[in-house]
Image 1 (cartoon, rainbow, N blue to C red):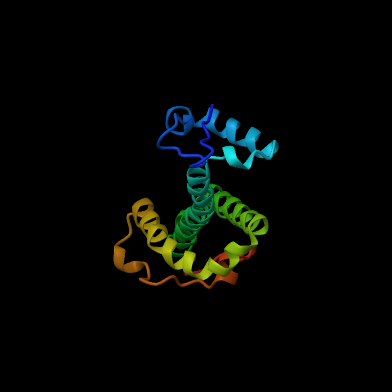
Image 2 (cartoon, rainbow, N blue to C red):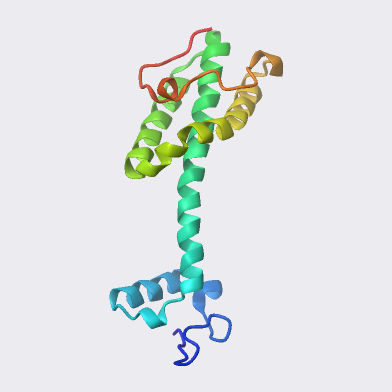
Amino acid sequence: MLAFDVEQGYNSMSSPSTYHSDFYAWTKEQTEILSNQQWHKLDVENLIEEIESLGRQQRQELRSRLAILLGHLLKWQYQSEQRSRSWLATIRVQRRDILKLIKENPSLKAHLLETILDAYDNGRDIAMGETNLPEEIFPQQCPYVPDQILNLNFYPDN
């Protein structure tokens, strides 16, 4: 269990912590400590790190889903003769999941344009890798605006 020194408070360096040896057990311990409102027993340093990490994960999930969506929109536009139900399904699933992610985390919307710009290079790489079309065919900058990207009925033409 976690150690607490009355004079120094909780110190993860001087007490054995399951954070590094058994993360799952650590999360259960921290949950129990929070539930019992035993604030002095919290592993504050690692809790802060984990909460920050959770926020980064949400933004990374948005960036990853946007990259997949953008890659498929580019394939849809620039290799129209190869369009398939699979591409359509990927576009639809990614859009719905992105919209759900933003609904569950409304503050992500404030970062949407920046995240699209970050995700576009990966989306472009996906399109180039899956189509074997020359790099210069795909625009250097994202050709779609956020409203188009998230519009369930938008499919780009050539």
